[in-house]
Image 1: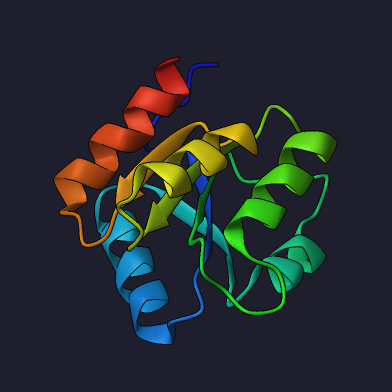
Image 2: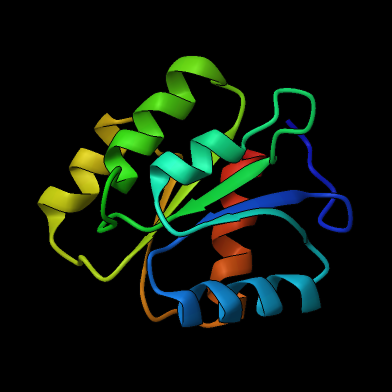
Length: 127
């Protein structure tokens, strides 16, 4: 799958409104188009439109109602071509292993610079 960054669409789910706002702003400035934002996985999935799916979903792990693991599993079961990048404070190997077991395409630890986020996005879309 080849995704041009100037046309790549992103969905972000994070339960911290400030983190969500900062991520959206950084990705917009970097040339990505954020088409979906949600404060938890359940709302993220409810907002999905099968006619306009994001190319990449940037998901936090620790969210209320439906966490990043559950959201990743749902996305990969229903839309396997959608790429998932987990973006989390969890630095332990168990969290990373579980994320990949759920189908995540990449894992990034908070806080990360926009360059690190862009590099992670490029790695998963070029895989």
